[in-house]
Amino acid sequence: MSDIIIRPAVESDIPRLEALLYQVHGLHAEGRPDLFIPGCKKYTADQLRGLLTDRVNTPIFAAILEGELVGYCFCVRQAQTAASMQKITTLYIDDLCVDAAMRGRGIGKVLYDYAVEYARENGYYNLTLNVWACNPSAMRFYEKCGLAVQKVGMELVL
Image 1 (cartoon, rainbow, N blue to C red):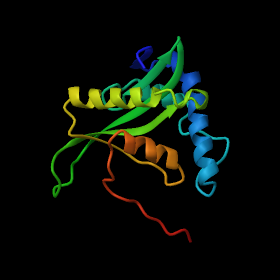
Image 2: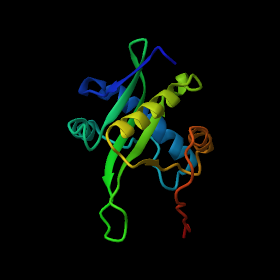
Image 3: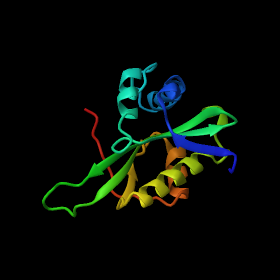
Image 4: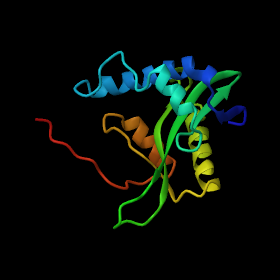
């Protein structure tokens, strides 16, 4: 979508970021109520302010459509430090959300593509993310974007 603008998120975006964080958390709470507390969100306003101050280690991108923030992509710079592993730097997508009312319009793909280009331009080795198994639509979205399974997390609920 050419009319979508992707820009770094700013402090005045916090109320809208919080509203979208509630949407994502609600989806996860519906899928895994044993793990996610309904009515909560991942970050407080103060935590968001902190994340927004470090554009190198925690870049946050905002998708703007017709002047409204309709999506975000929270990223984290991760450097591999284990002695037995290659010394690579990863751009980890911590959270990507498009407003529920705006999904299916290509906004998520524009956000994702922006993060990929950001990673390329900034010398990252790869881009990674995690998807909850209770969110099959997100799995399909990322597979359509070309991502492949890197590793699988497993659990036994006791």
